[in-house]
Length: 450
Image (tube, rainbow, N blue to C red):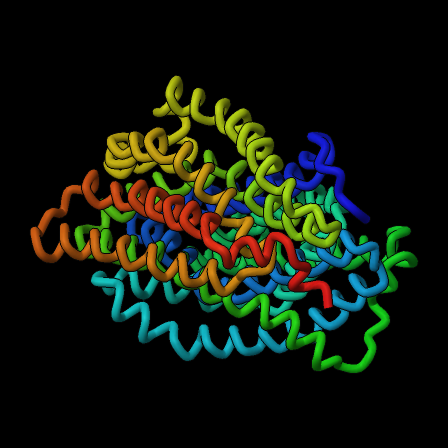
């Protein structure tokens, strides 16, 4: 299944990914909205706990990216049965990783939360949320593997339905468990974590059922569950481990960023959490089209069309900017309405509104840098993506430490400027990489084609 890179084909891959991300962000916003009815401590805790949770399970997202890239490469080579074999082997690894992550979460949770959270109230609330949220890690690991396969073969429209149902289930379960309805005792922030876990389990059921029923099952011959093939496992992890490392560095920096803000104050953390939710929502097209860029790059290398990747980059950047425009206009025209959709906390909302300039200042740099950076892993050089991320994060944390610890500047405007600096440095690093001889090797040779 070789990609043609028409606008329609790009949108058919990107839009379900974008819709899924929108639904996941709506879940985060919904959680925040429910917690804002409980108190500012719970509102701050659910944001911080969610970041911590995604730090831990980001291993799965890196693993998912590797599966998607490998499946797209096999499709570019017209090897559908081999693509199906990748999924089967990936499911074995996903189950192992799920158990590893669950153990890691419960072993590290208390230590990391105590080290990074100043307020004992926020700590206890964060812990309550995570204890219930972790129930669904196994189901989430399998679901992400299945979604990666669907993205790789560009047959991912079922994600739209499953994501929408997950949001509706999460809202209903929050209503039941957080406030105590239908005979269930009120669980507060613990009920919020349980609601999210139940939504993940339902998504797993929907995606699995779909893959069992679609006609592509015969073409790709997945779910045959052969014995573990160690060479295939090695191929998956050789690509996945640097992506996992790169992703962990990036998201741990996001958690560290919010930990710095939490030390400034709980209200500042709550306001920053509101801004984060809006920022992530506005930038969803960037994440979706960056993911698409990665798959198309891999498929093009499989077709031996590496010379066309940068033309494709320009096309995808243009489409991304068009998708960003409505969100930016809405934020410019109706900032108070959008903030109030996220939270009813007046003080925290005021803090978030004062920081909206960050979104306007960073989105174009974010889109240019992120889409280009995703080409690096897409062509198979995931080790370089790790190196670039490590160098970038050094600048990022260096800036935050200097202004908060050395100069004792606790103004959120200066702290949030780190987000703009992050994408500038990453973009420059990626531009340098594509000027090197190393990048030419990956663009012209089918490194993942053995």
